[in-house]
Image (cartoon, rainbow, N blue to C red; front, side, top):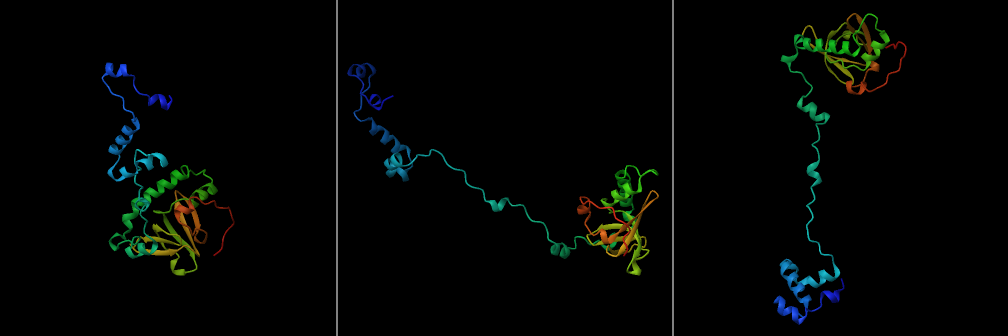
Length: 219
């Protein structure tokens, strides 16, 4: 529709019939309406807003502070040592307390090795044990460069990258280094040997590692 037609005056006959009166300058009504509608701080810039800038009838949402959305960081190794997170209290260093854990571990390994039947392939069992979690296993140190470790038997209560923490039947907590040590573990008649020097990984890392079949490794 042309602007001239929109701004055309109403015929005199229709003015009497409709009871209205034509205004010679309709733009004055628009300016007055915008002045009354816009906030007080921008009334003086109405013409500038209409001629040079786009008029935004809305608001933008406030931006979120990204610093508040960050997840809290966990404890580092130094803080864990200071808080003694991995230390067992003396009253908890009892062999009988960890026997239920050993029973759970045996059932876990039996399920992992598909039942551990007499006809099971020893190499298949060995490959499964390489990636298994040993918390709760009863192990014996059969060889070591430190003679005082040889013959130590107990339940593994904690496994770290370089050491096993073992609770013995005498309720003593022993820290056995993996390096230069050979451990034996027995499950339902299957005896497997663990070479600690090639076992220096955390349980979570070992479960995803691919091991190569090699010959006997001497200390």
